[in-house]
Length: 242
Ligand SMILES: C[S@@+](CC[C@H](N)C(=O)[O-])C[C@H]1O[C@@H](n2cnc3c(N)ncnc32)[C@H](O)[C@@H]1O
Image (cartoon, rainbow, N blue to C red; front, side):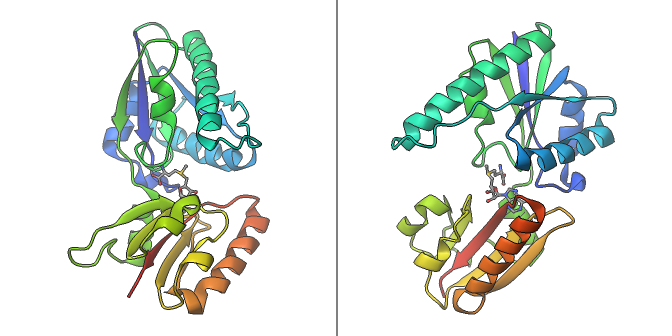
């Protein structure tokens, strides 16, 4: 049996890596990353910097990410099929690179429990893998820290969702990840507050906050310009209804 260490690394600043994560890196025989092209180029570079700092000599083994069927109308079935193909590709590489009894390592962006499929893929691998998870700082925590705000107001609940599902939300305290379309422009009220952040934890970090009426269009403009400049973007925001 081999082990799979899923190590949360935070959102881009190598100083967010915890001592627990550094210890776990020393146990790993080979590190793997699914290579998704342009975005992964930068993110893989950051992962390699983290290894150079905390596990010198370790190299990331890049595995081409099998393409997802984006033409399918059945989103869940398409994702399920994609995860299966990822699990097979990873299993082949792990069997080749990690001895029986050894450990495969995954430097997971943010925290492995938040909108990340690594654990799900590892659990359905056709080879026996025992997972261990090391928590990391999420993009939500990087966002609230950068704006110096709390996620919730006193005693209120928090809702975490994606751009695709934002329309179903009540807007009280909502954190939105994975939104390439600035969906808040269609769903939020003009006097809702928005705290937006992109490239959090990296030298390119951008922050905008205000009411949606005042800064909504500015966020769309800033986002498009930054995406054009860097070739990729990751952004997250908190919406709060007064
Ligand atoms: C696949 S999810 C991974 C989330 C990650 N596991 C976490 O703990 O934050 C990717 C989304 O996380 C958010 N995200 C991750 N890193 C970010 C960063 N450095 N700045 C802003 N948003 C980020 C964006 O909403 C992005 O679309």
